[in-house]
Length: 471
Ligand SMILES: Cc1cc2nc3c(=O)[nH]c(=O)nc-3n(C[C@H](O)[C@H](O)[C@H](O)COP(=O)(O)OP(=O)(O)OC[C@H]3O[C@@H](n4cnc5c(N)ncnc54)[C@H](O)[C@@H]3O)c2cc1C
Ligand SMILES: NC(=O)c1ccc[n+]([C@@H]2O[C@H](COP(=O)([O-])OP(=O)(O)OC[C@H]3O[C@@H](n4cnc5c(N)ncnc54)[C@H](O)[C@@H]3O)[C@@H](O)[C@H]2O)c1
Image (tube, rainbow, N blue to C red; front, side):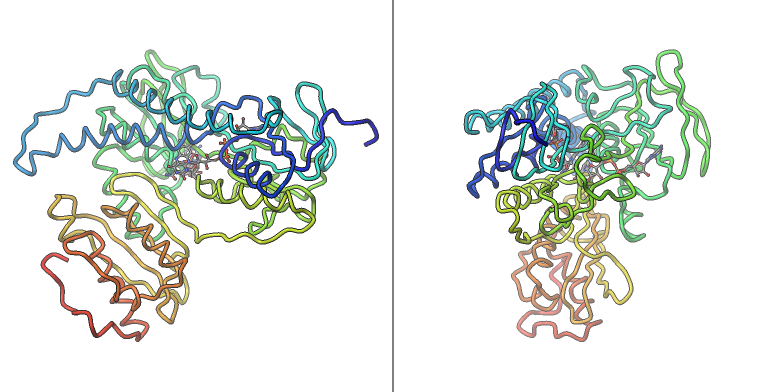
């Protein structure tokens, strides 16, 4: 490359989402002159069309559900009236508040750091911008996120086909909804819509929801969501336009056809790499066209190129995007010296009710499993939500290595278990910790005690091995 670049920097970050913002901050903290390149700077996916609006819709669904089940406790508020436009208006108003925070964060960037353009590689550390300029960087971080995949038959069917980009813009709740894909996006939004009074059918070509590990956990999840929506697993779907909607025909494990007012496509989110001209980067790509990288350093091969967030298609979650961005940005600034970052055990939550959680290693050869049944757990029972299971996984010494849960409070219980796994705790050691009564945490004791027995580790003798009522 002989011609002079228009811009130079130590670290160029492509993409100003969660991973890119973290990378730019980390690189700048390490003393690098940075450029942050994004065509829009519209705030993160998480705030605009991801984590936050989906959780806002789920919060509305919780309110409707709580009202509907209040009679269990002898409280009779009556059947809830769901004002669809008001539900969607609150989702957008609160969402816009979160988006504004992420945009305000951009004001802290040093002047000249933000480059409003699309970037592509013309050489390993040389980028061409859509405004015609070129950037020469010491190192580059790819943080371009992911995009909703819409399978061919669902394209070009008009605005009744929704993705996470459009569903939160609906002025009112749909009259009926087909959800294609039972991953976290499909499942969370399907259950929420169902609880908000929408007639929902969820279709998946596979037979497992949200990659739930272990049959007991999957059964608990499936049973819970089937109360709110219709599930059609193991089917292929074919859409076609119909009067007032989209007709979905399906076949496989079951068959049928039905017209829905809207269809939400949630069939996965591949990384946004197509527009980057990766061929010019010189990187080695895997079978899916994603750069091969080291998940401890986030470096792609031995190039001065790093990758972070959904773009690497590894752990496509918010906290991982943020950690990966921090590691990638720091190492881009110090390249050619790169230092492994600290990664946490895998940890994923799906915000269904009850939530689904997985931590670290799953069931497998040589793994010791302890089980807790929440179907009669004391605190869960007081709240009329006793259901589900927890499995804790340990090695032969009783050290916790993972867990799978679908039970009340799973999002909080799973945090405790993730922290226990990361800190190397044993089942015996955890049983020495205080357990308040009556709590959902007490439910863990059965699984922990089973692991102690099976690994011949002592149960702490200064703790009673009986159970408080309902614990
Ligand atoms: C509906 C939904 C719900 C979710 N809920 C959760 C949840 O509850 N918890 C959780 O942990 N995760 C959740 N996720 C996942 C989480 O939101 C993502 O993992 C995370 O936001 C990814 O961040 P990112 O920085 O990789 O991507 P993004 O925030 O999408 O940033 C990518 C940026 O790159 C830019 N870009 C792309 N190509 C180029 C280019 N060539 N040049 C310049 N810029 C470019 C884009 O404009 C964009 O600003 C959810 C996702 C969805 C869709
Ligand atoms: N709570 C959370 O943390 C959360 C919430 C939402 C999304 N996310 C992140 O976003 C990622 C993307 O989510 P997602 O749910 O879109 O993708 P996903 O890849 O996790 O799930 C897609 C599902 O669609 C099914 N599918 C694919 N093609 C199909 C077809 N043609 N017909 C029927 N079914 C089909 C697959 O079998 C799979 O079950 C997640 O993997 C997760 O990392 C996280």
